[in-house]
Image (cartoon, rainbow, N blue to C red; front, side, top):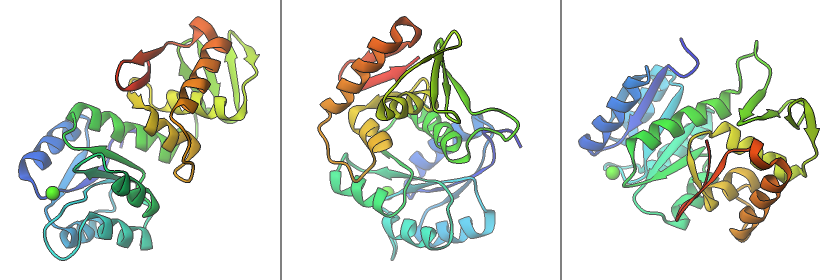
Amino acid sequence: MGPQTGTIVVVEDDPHIADLIDMYLRRDGHRVIQANQGEAGLHAVEREKPRLVILDVGLPGPIDGFEVCRRLRASSSVPVMMLTARDDEIDRVLGFELGADDYVTKPFSPRELAARVKAIIRRVEGPPPDKPAVFQAGAVDVDTGRREARVAGRVVPLATREFDLLAHFALNRGLALSRQQLLDGVWGMGWYGDERTVDVHVGQLRKKLGDALPLTTVWGVGYRLD
Ligand code: CA
């Protein structure tokens, strides 16, 4: 089994969405099991021991996606990505409180969803044991073991949150991340700060790392590490 492959359970009642997700994940080498109701999803997870679960919030039948997530977390630490119908603060907060690892708002690009699946697996499972936990961010070596950023072998001193933000970009390379997603991922869900906090820290990273860090501002979205 390759580092990004394995079984993924998709719990989604809309067959078009489920098939689209299925197609993109298979393309990346995953085996996909579909379930169209909460109970069926729970059984599939129990049976298949998947590497990740994609879980729609709005499901028919007695239990919705939130309840499925809650029951999963009672017995399993499998990564969960929730699909929410709208960018609803309550859904987002509740999902994270129940132990979801990430969320995507409908309508979503299947390409982005597939990239997020890779990112979650990287984040949750960490690097393979035979590899050091050093990620590339352009010309910057991001050493998550030593918590050091190095350019051409020279350590660039960063504040704690600056390093966390840099590591988060390195783990989600190629993905456009909104300021809210960065706040959630770096500062955590209990932190209700201003989104400008992200801009301030990005400004510091750019100042300290300069051209070594290929960080692009994505207009109307946030930032992307190329
Ligand atoms: Ca649904």
